[in-house]
Image (cartoon, rainbow, N blue to C red; front, top):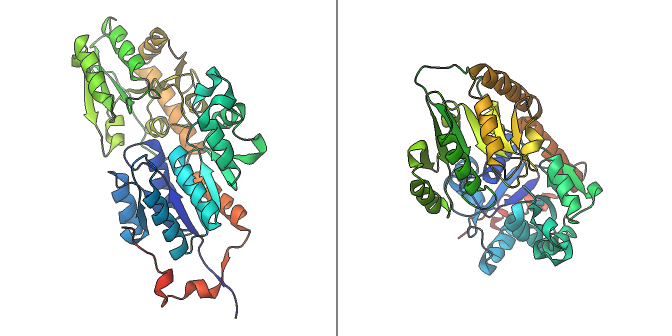
Amino acid sequence: MAEIKSLPRVMISIVRADTGGAPEHVLQLVKALQDQVEFYIVCPHDRPYYQRLATLLGQDRMVEIPHRRLQISAFRRMARAVRDNKIDLIHSHGKGGGVYGRLIALLTGRQVVHTQHGMSPDAKDKHWYLDHNIWLDLILGKVTDACICVSEGEKIETVAQHVAKAHQLTVIPNGVPNGLRRHHVDVDGKPLNLVTVSRFDAQKNPDELLEIVDILSQRDIPNGFHLTVLGVGQGKDAFERKLADRSLDGFVTMTGAVSDVRRIYRRSDMLISTATWEGMPLALLEAMSEGLPIVASQVVGNRDVVNDGENGFLYPLGNPESAVDAILKLSNADTRQRLGDAGREMVNARHSVKTMADQTLQLYKTVLGKHHIRQPDAEKSEDASVRPKQAT
């Protein structure tokens, strides 16, 4: 009997589906490749991305696991779904998704691709062999067929932390949909509108953002300024209290989770990032695609997309005065227009979703073999054992 070619079946594992760059990355990847790959998703029942992915693929291709937590029963559900749905390859995202995906790949004999989405630089402050996270990555790396870094900076950081050798890593930069061209104009009485995206954790560094707001409040800015903070997190309430304690809350609007961040980008003048590290931040790419210039900390990820003085400004991490100086340079509408246009052109040229998806698909094909072929007995549509199973 002749062999039958079919779409490869890929299961994506990720331990968060709330607001964030990694869930958005997964959504864009699935949307771009759904006609060429049969995707199944393992993720928590978080808003908004669980619903978006379930709407796109169907509930029968979703497997629910806890939010950022390992659970034995979740491993069992995932392993059963891999076998029942004849999954060919597992693509894990982030540290938690990597634990689930790579252990299940080992257990079920599937091939696995892993995307890191950022390497924390904390291990540089101590001997690398004392960091349990690095040992975890080293061990799981032994069962990983391919590892994706979302930026050159992340690749360098991964090698520096002894997690992998350079030849084991593939760089596939993040991609975002194209945005609109912005027209920056000075309007009498209009304050300088800043925007930032935060999870209010150590990585996003909200305390430095607080210092920037404090310094800006003491500067002579025509028509003043206002900062919109997008996002949620455990540290959100503490951040709001600190604003109130310093009488800075009048300068800041806290939106919480927002379904359409681009709508807010389009009415802002620039985006601020105080992150201590990144992989390749989607928030910056999305803002740049909408023509926003950037003021960002000079760390891995940020410096992979911001060319200082060309499409934004980089400032030394821990130096909020320098960040304020950069913000004031962008208070001029002509400067904002020039840097915003340059950023938009760069993102459209180098960071399209299609390019990211095409490169990822090519990696899938390389890992699975040049031509993906499934035996006919795996395609018997009348056999209930191979139909997609909905997780409980």
